[in-house]
Length: 454
Image: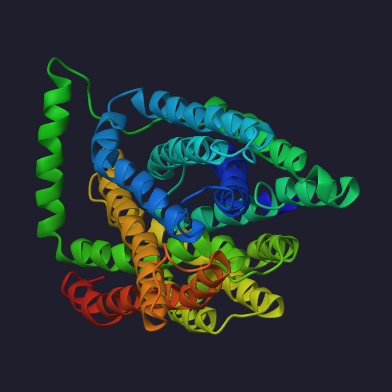
């Protein structure tokens, strides 16, 4: 592959994991919410599918966030990083196999939709835990496979490969199958997509398992678990004392929340507005196709202007995306939104990761530091979906109250119409967290970086 010319075997093997796990990012994160909304429509007492999905996403992220620093600390012991990576990768893969079964279950018979819906949510949460925890160790390997000078380039190219491979090919296979077999075979196509995700994720994880080794570690000794937990406290003190790192993490906590929420909620939002599912998925396919060239553009631009400048560009673009999303009402606008997301989705995540990697003072404790990086990213992902869900539900309740109705007394058609009208307010609420994250990033972080000579 000409794109990978000049990269080492370890760098290429590490980057291939983005190719592997991106199948989960696009298939489970974007197609599964549409399937869940379908199941929810058969429930006797269903809330808005978008609201419930937001809460489920927050629950998954909360579990990962609470455990991330502990996972990261254990990953710093010699030989443990790859072992734990393998365990959580397999947890994610197996849960995707379980998701492949759910479309074949009966959710139309009264009383069955609740059971199938619960199974989907539980498997989604487990797959998200496996995906996120494996990513923690994957990120930690970044300091093992490359140098600080090449980190921006390697990190961003990893995201680029994810777009052209895992994010594109499984989704394209699903869309082609659905087109050829017809809408009456949609449930079979969904099972195929979730099953393919499991196989794809496992097979393309093998290069990392074979060629990437943990080169920095803490020695394992008696009482290692207690020492690891004690070490978390000292790492937290180091982060608190390093004002630039602390401010960066807090800014990241807010702005990446908006990015992740838009990724997780986009199809659920479009489905709530009544947009055509196939058209939305084609638009998301366009995001994946455009992802690689825009990642390459971010690599080139970051080498000229710096990673910090380009992350700032990404924050500004996402603020615009949030405002545009509030006015979104038709499929063509969803396509425009998809193109805007494609410009910066990979770049802002990749450069944020490499910026933090270069800030770590002790590379042998990369897992520990990336554990805290992960906790900031995952706890923020609790706030965003919950904020969208809460704001949407509040706006819907107000609209019903203005008509002298409640969710229990209103006609289902009225509830559906009000839910669609309320959803844009949930998306607009994300501006609050972008303003806070952007304010810290643009106006506070530079002062501390300047003091430390960066």
